Amino acid sequence: MTRILTIEPDAPLARRIAASLAREALTVEHAATAREALHHVTGGDYALVTVTHDIADIDGPTLVAAMRATGVALPILALDPDGSIERCVRMLKAGADDYQPFPLDFDELGARVHALLRRRDRPPAASTPEAAAQLRAPGIMLDRIRRIACVDATLVMLRPTEFRLLEFLMLNPDRVVTRRMILEAVWQHHFDPGTNLIEVHVKQLRKKIHDPAGRRFIRTVRRAGYYFSGEAAPDPREDEAPRLHIEQAIQGVAAR
Image 1 (cartoon, rainbow, N blue to C red):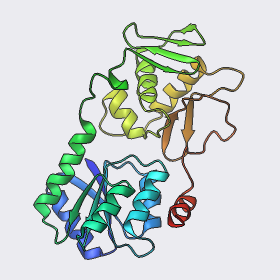
Image 2 (cartoon, rainbow, N blue to C red; image 1 turned 30 degrees about the vertical axis):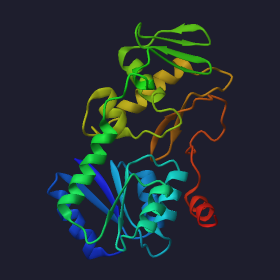
Image 3 (tube, helix red, strand yellow; image 1 turned 180 degrees about the horizontal axis):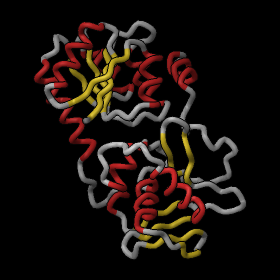
Image 4 (cartoon, rainbow, N blue to C red; image 1 turned 45 degrees about the vertical axis):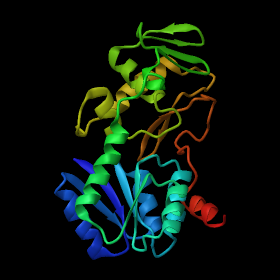
């Protein structure tokens, strides 16, 4: 089931939002503060986030900007009790994808959420990397027509599943992809079987494309997933996310 994170300090309102979206076959989880929300969204597997403008610890635009600064690429729907044009512009400029003022019409809310989800899942245009015949990064090339990979001009033989895994990671360079995203894209599993299926294939793929000098294309992010590094340089901080620390993001954005 599609999971939504709603960031709303008013618990009764959050329950009403959850109930309305549940009727749209969506599962809603609730965060009441900005810091709680950032911990959820950077470690959880969500399809979309709703953010209310007025939050206790920081305001909505600052929170949205902090999420974008920490690498959160999820669709963000801003909700605002005030509904003024000025506040709408602030939320959108901070990085929100859409905006809905109060009083909330829950039918409209569901429609906006589904519209954002459709936009996220829309098939790529022919000019996008998803449609390219080859995917490239320094030192590595993936030929999607001939289904081969080359590392430093050396042919690397990949099994079909390994190819699909590398393809999915290269289509999302420097972006953390979760276990659920990998399972859906590579295995067409819409659930986590609770096995080490992904870990085994990542390990085998790393053996084939990483080199003894320490260059690492595939990085692990603890409790989050994996990401493909377009630079592929040696990195002693293998398990650190390619994003700012949560507290640094909040402080940095708030100080602007």
